[in-house]
Image (cartoon, rainbow, N blue to C red; front, side, top):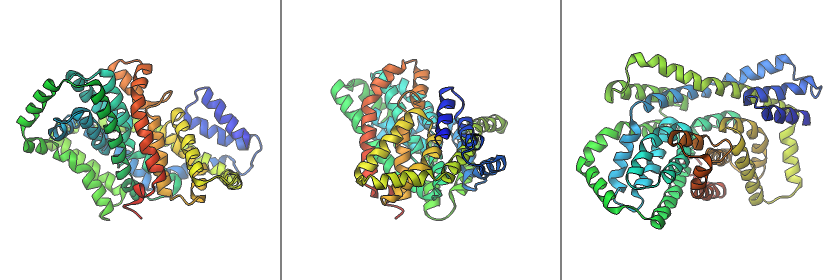
Length: 428
């Protein structure tokens, strides 16, 4: 069995793409005589089965919906609307940035996409209001991770497929954890602004300008975006449609907004949007197919059972075991992208979690939150690199400014990990 992990480690060390690395490591079990069941026919069938999933249809549809929404300048509309309520408070605008990331995450389902869309508008704006560019960029990069936690979330769909769980339950379970994380980040931003101070005169003038626009015009301009999570989650929770059908509704709704309401795109733009969707989807499908094969090989070699037996024999308390799982996931999130980490680690760690009585949905939420933190921690840190590239900030500098927000994220993670009701209140 060790040969599988040796091949995987060697392939990753040589910068072989993660999907190919997983496939090679699984095939090595046959090549080196570990198991003759893992023959070419088994490899082919496992990879095809990994893609032959009805819930998986939701992934390209949510990606397409997010790309359509991104063309509408929606981040600016959301930011101005929330500024109407928070702009006069201490740290009001940074808190508004966090709330905007939270709502935009419901449109994009992606951390880097949320960071790019919100950051491109919010960071220069915060800088013009007297905030440090490094602080603003670190805040948005960290809050951008809410894109994979606030439903609809692509990682939630991937976990549901890997764990044979309900996509709808994962979506609904993500609401409270997402709000808790946003609250922790907002408190961190508040503490920073109290310590460093703000340009109160400039902020008062800005708030007066927002108030002058008026509540109803701001609501009218942003209401279409605000209704998106309500329609999707309300439809799923109310039993009106399945998560896959919700993805279709999301695409239609996005097209209506883009073509007829905001008029930010035309039908001639659709081929470009579809091509961009395909470019985002293709690597993801390769990883899913290869990781399905990898997971089946681990199961065939009884890896999950062996790990569970070892943990059970060690007589470790559930509290310590949950902490250990969190450390493994945090480390994995620093080195591997979210999708790959979910598909690789779910078959190994889920049996351990269920053995101590942890609910599958609760475990999935804990896993995704851990991996979301990985989006803002080097060396992978996709959100950090997006912000670094956009605002020309060295990665070391941005990481230093992001540390307080990462600590806030970790506090939220501890609450989510040890209080199952936060994830399960709406579904159990």
